[in-house]
Amino acid sequence: MGEIKKLETAKLMKKVMADHFYEIDAACKSGDPKVAWCTSVGPAELLRAMGFVVYFPENHAAILGASRAANDCIPAANAIGYSPEICSYLTADIGAYLKGFTPLAKIYDGIESIPKPDVLVYNTNQCRDVKDWFEWYSREWQVPCYGIESFVNVGEVTKDHVDSIAGQMKQLAAKITAATGNRLDEDKLKETVRLSRRCSDLWREVLEMAAHIPSPLTFFDGTIHMGPAVVMRGTQVAVDYYETLLKELQSWVDQGIAAVEGERHRIYWEGMPIWGKLRENAKLFLDLKTCVVASTYCNSWVFSAFDPDDPWNSMARAYTELFIVRDDDYKEEYYKRMLEIFKFDGIIFHDAKTCPNNSNCRYGLPQRFSQETGIPFITIDGDLNDLRCYSEEQAITKIEAFIEQLDG
Ligand code: SF4
Image (tube, rainbow, N blue to C red):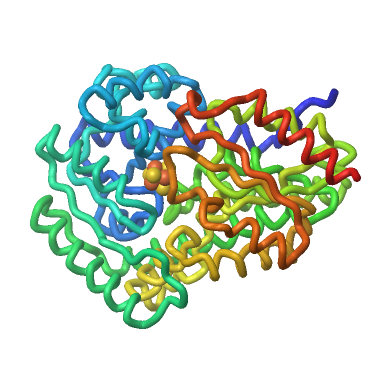
């Protein structure tokens, strides 16, 4: 049985993430700069260009999941009326707050709590849950909460879509200035969009390293290394991080080092990771000599539309072009493009019980894609954070049978 191979750059990741949390903690304690909370595909560039340090609660919720603390926290949110059926990031995060708990305090000496924000900013492009989540904290702390109300099920992204979202972004900036006094620096906005674009391009190159056969990277590695693309896009730190990671991956490719020794099969993962079982799942596929080479989830922080010469429209387009915002026809074509790049021989749909937004197996999409391409699929029942929704034995049996089928 092989061991999971670790990239050296993972050590740098630990430092980069620690610096990120200490920076926000220091800002929160001193009051300068002000702290903004932002959804994971919210307008981070705008907030940085307005002088905020930016904190991403979904990242915190994923840490709750990965450290297996989520299941102790979720009931506390259920008890105040937030259903076990809704986003388990939301329930884990609010539940943790209600219990006075954060894993950050365990990981980082001196950090005692999550940072209280000066403003909460969401974009409903991914789901309505983020709005409800932020509004809860807004009521709890009497802090202003603003957002962008996005389109859903978008086919082609049109000028009307872009105009609407760009207009909302401008109004958002004005509301934030009125509430906090922080003003937008237009030059800084251009620079931040430039850095986000560079980060996004590098992140895409990192993910596309998995197109090599054998792949130097798995989906499970991707869920760890995506950290800077999520919480530090728009900064030089994120750019430097991915330049380093890319060099290491290139050296693995040059030496023929495979993430999964003896790679026999290549799989596409559709849907959220199961954070509390990341290591177990990585090991399961490793032992099956199967590399999960790509995923919609990790690709979600590739924003190819960012253009520093046209920051407002390009931000509006980038945050509307996302996979999660699109209709099923677009999604099916997207999988076909992924198939061409990554040459996978099977696809696993994760039906995450508390996230219908990231579960694309409920309206016949897997069947349509499979019929057209001949690529077989399975669906596994689970969840991003709530492990009560995940039957590990059942998932393992299904996955093992699927790989046997691919062998055949
Ligand atoms: S997209 Fe899903 S996991 Fe993410 S915040 Fe929304 S409901 Fe939660």
